[in-house]
Image 1 (cartoon, one colour):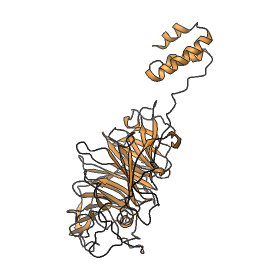
Image 2 (cartoon, helix red, strand yellow):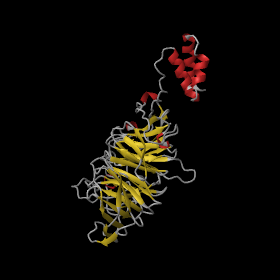
Image 3 (spheres, rainbow, N blue to C red):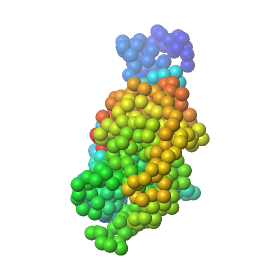
Image 4 (cartoon, rainbow, N blue to C red):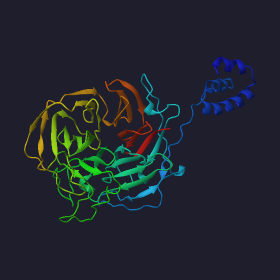
Length: 445
């Protein structure tokens, strides 16, 4: 219905009738979306200053079932129960909705949802055992495998696994490997290498290795099984003795203390943000040693010493690979910029002195990089989807969508106080971690 038709039909209707009709049309407009202008005009005739926008639905947090099955704990964990529980909607325990924001920029950003109906849905929080979430990643599915979202939790040195996340069928399970205080100590980030494995990086200088110890910087990325029959299930006997397995990890290399971000490349190759030394490092685990082993010698570490990055304590600098273009995008948190690194270029020079007695160890120089966008307030989360680069700004709580050339396409104020990891879900919607609120949030509906 056009505005002229609306006024022409009802312009001389008595005010009391207009009020009643306006209320009825407003309710119908919220369902059909085509009569909002007419309803607003009728309300104005009756003395209304303007129609209110549709209310944002309150964000709800699934409640934690009382039934939990313990899976293993870490002495330095938050003390939360570790186990599996089915989540159900519980409005009484719902978290308050985060304020909605309107997109800015020349085009709409589908991953931000419809501004008219957008809600921020808290799908996990402290009641699910989250103590310090830093990152999140969807496990690649195979066949009829259920959708699973893994959340890196620095506060427990473990993960929270959400099966069927954000649905009424959601099930959550917190898992902490018994040796996670070394292999996942203050985990900052994770990245999948396929449906059966992932790697994590740790913001740690290694103050625990089977027992508390002085920091020795024997720390770097860890390779893990994503098979739920293996992860934090095998090798859990403690204390460790000679000949025993050290947890469920598949491999670990130890050249990057205070590692702030990780991205998968190919096979068992990953890129890491080395926060202690301030550069990027290429890690190849080669053939893993199997759960709980200790032979790292076949690995390769190439330090890209020209690809400079700056750590901000407690704020991950996430990374994402454009596999087709062979460009690595890096959130240089302390530098306030996003870098594009041409990872297949440069000159390698072998060095001695690796901590793991590696087959290959050395430095790569001459790696080209460029600034995609600068002047940012602590960029942390990154996601790449359909030609758009999503950057989460820890300093402002905003997520900004850019094209890969650095032109802004949209901006979303999330209201997050500690915006960190980002992901685009199977539903093509934005998901993010708020490390301060200790929540995982989906942009809906």
